[in-house]
Image (tube, rainbow, N blue to C red):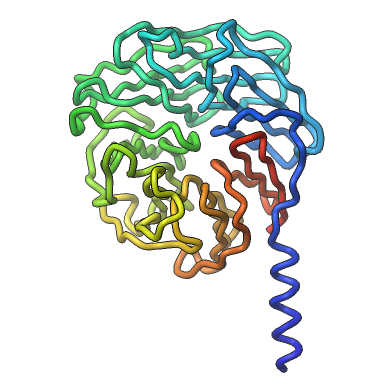
Length: 329
């Protein structure tokens, strides 16, 4: 019996490791969209967008826009050919822009730009191939939310009068492009500790305070929902990203109430993905897996990443310095 258990542990350790692949760039990547086990889009710093059509083994690199300082912290792939890239950065600095491609990244069209002082775009989220949102930091206590209904060709700001007020100066961290997520017609939009929730595709919203620890450098870095009811907050403090802290919260009622918790290895968690009952979480402190819907966790790797996404059992992670890994759950 002892030998059998030992072999199981060894096999798990060998199985659950990231297979690292060289992207050919040292840019930092905080957004990735996995359409299936072959097609992957990734947004990075130095105005770089990447696309793979063979599961991350090879990549096309595109320079998007004229400003080499653009940082595409939001990316949405609508198909192998069509994608939308969102540049994080302040409007007054000329960095708040959205680009779209229809030819697999060969050419890009600027479809939105704002010079509004304080405007900062954090990420992108779609309900379907037509209806989507780009979310940003609050201006004062008004959420900054853009909406498209034609696949990202045109964008219009949602009138703040139709959105609840949030805490003044609240940020939605541009950390992993998962500060807004959807499930069916339900949407969750995270700020440092607060959540805007819509149950009807963004027609109406209400505000929930999650109770997650927050401040200038800490709060909610990502969200992940398994269904309408069971979901997770990932976060922490990026200034102390390896220190033990609250880095996860779980809800069983769609986000109305949250229970804070900790995932090992200690430190910042930014992103989660799932396959069946398995949930994989990563951040700059490393990667963990739960095989029981988030009630317990196993540390599997200490490699720092910003984003994890899965297509079925095929999972991919990306982060700073062009770091990219893949594994099967």
